[in-house]
Length: 189
Image (cartoon, rainbow, N blue to C red; front, side, top):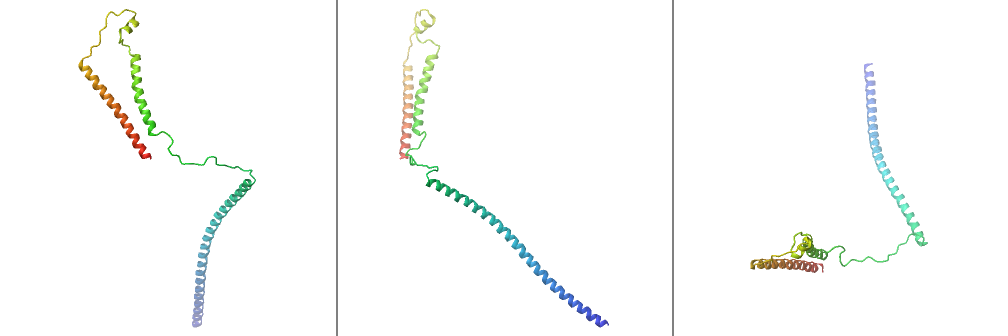
């Protein structure tokens, strides 16, 4: 009996091992299938997203096509908005706006007007009496005597030197402006 029981146990063991082998084969095939299903689901979601994007682009293109068709129909019937070019665009020969010449002219004008304005202001609003007639008019009293201005040789030399320096500065500034204008004009050509 022990031998029969041993044979039965061995038969049950081999059957259990066969079932275990079949079960593990089925488990591996199911795991492979689940991996394929997961990959397919991932691919499906990617394809679905691509489809949605493509569908949106397609709908946008359809709208544009319809708008273009309507616009062409309106143009054909002369009912739409039409534009005509009156003057063609051209490249300007000179740049627009202020140029060096304008700044140079403004600088020269200010160089003349500011000293003249200061001189006028000093002469107009200086309270000192420079002539005897002015003093008579201001006070209403007669002037008995005036002291004439006495200029020495040193005063004449100092005035001549100051005049020479002022003339040299004016000529130098004018020459610098002229030179700068000539340089700019040759570069523009």
